[in-house]
Length: 506
Image 1: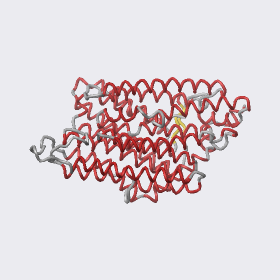
Image 2 (image 1 turned 135 degrees about the horizontal axis):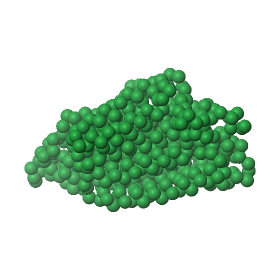
Image 3 (image 1 turned 60 degrees about the vertical axis):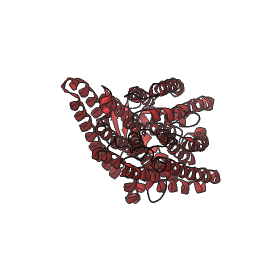
Image 4 (image 1 turned 135 degrees about the vertical axis):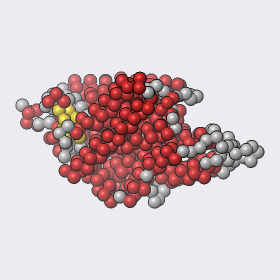
């Protein structure tokens, strides 16, 4: 386990270079390397997850063998390895679909960019240093810029331009916030920053608070919270299906950063700044959920509707973080697993619908298509799961979060907002399904050009499979997520493992 924290970074990085080097030997060589890389990443992350779960260790990897906070460290704990595992499994499903539908062949460097995206994501989850969080953000964003434009589609360039501009602004604000915190605290290590904030004198509190809120804006932009969410529906709705599926984890990077950075630095030991950001997260989460729900209702195209569904899941997770209790955070982690896989799979289903129906618009009456029964069943399964209906995992995740909200001072508004939103989502998806599969015309011959392959169907089922598995193994999984949540609230183990407090004092 000594070198485990760095392996999830080395695997996709080496694979990306190998794909570029072996490009002369044919496209299939790159496909094989890419698939083998993801499979290796899954094996490493799952074995590490099992080991970390059984021991509850926090592994610190010192790059260059420099002690923190003076050197750069990677930190592997139960939350970070869980996020790496989700990323690797999600990437496998998206890559499987891309190869099955030959979408990866629409661009020269799809597989190398795909691997660099995984490298950036894993780095963001594993880093224990806030500046390197910025670095890994930039790596995953640079890869995502090109992946977003992969292939040809109407409106993709415009959506890509908006995505690039808004993220460049976010990167600039990130540097301002990091520079301010470094100027006051003299460190960029997350654990050391938490320790320094606990000793902060009164004259610097307002400066650190302002920098922390600026960081919250940056992470809110990454997670697409109000009012910084307008880029998401167009970007996710216009890009290719496997890229949109992989992007389902991108918003979770912003949420993870809020939990890790703000939850550690401004946790219960931060004195006057303890959890000062929480009311912002809760209120913004409620507003985002209301607006995202209206977006789901108003959508006229299937991919755009799924993109707004991603936004509703982000909102529910923001609300859970804003409730600020171990039970709510445990429910949020459970719901994060559910929403990531189901949103990704729904993007693939939407792509299949568009190919079979020749359009994704609900208001265009089309003839019945050959694979309507199979594709309709897929749509129904994902709609039930995403809407949070029993007996699938979305229902259990929402129940866990809502149960935790019963002791909160704003219980009424949290319950009413989440439940009304769920009702409207059910109505919207019912309307969409009826328009796609029942509101058909008999004036022309049925469509029969698209044939759903077994491999494509299997890749979609692979992502859906996590919904029933989360229910079947709900007891051990919720125990695991609650343990993670408890460790996140008690940050002492993380801080003392990463840095030597006595050495810092000296």
